[in-house]
Length: 166
Image (cartoon, rainbow, N blue to C red; front, top):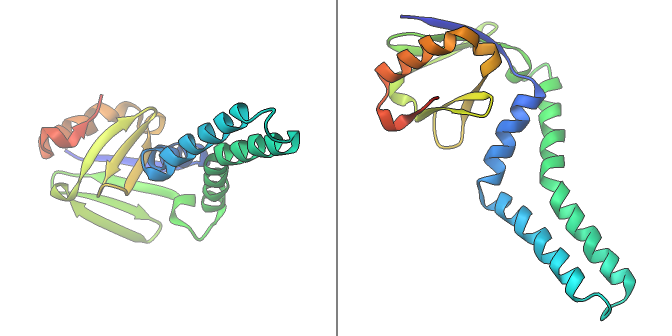
């Protein structure tokens, strides 16, 4: 059995993946907890400090809250628009019995199924992790009707605990 896919990653898909990764780590936790603490301090200190200080605390909370999503969005757009970056081009995937091959123009990489850390769906994305952090992103709308074949192949090649496909 062989499943071939041509995938074009857009900024929205890459952003979803990066947000998911960022908010699962310490940076994501801090980017939520810190603004809450700053907003709480602004509320509890209101009247005890000057109105300028209170506005400064609220402003700092907003900056902390917006920084991670904003910086990720700018970075993702830069990556997708950079024509020298592989993610800005069409990616050709071949899922075969023995190997998975990913090609971009003349360059190609292949790896064995046993090197797959995890394969899972998350929202509208199918993620093929090669380790805990790095994954190939396959938007489900582009996978389309080949999802069933790909799921069958993954279930045949990977241990159950490595598959979280719906």
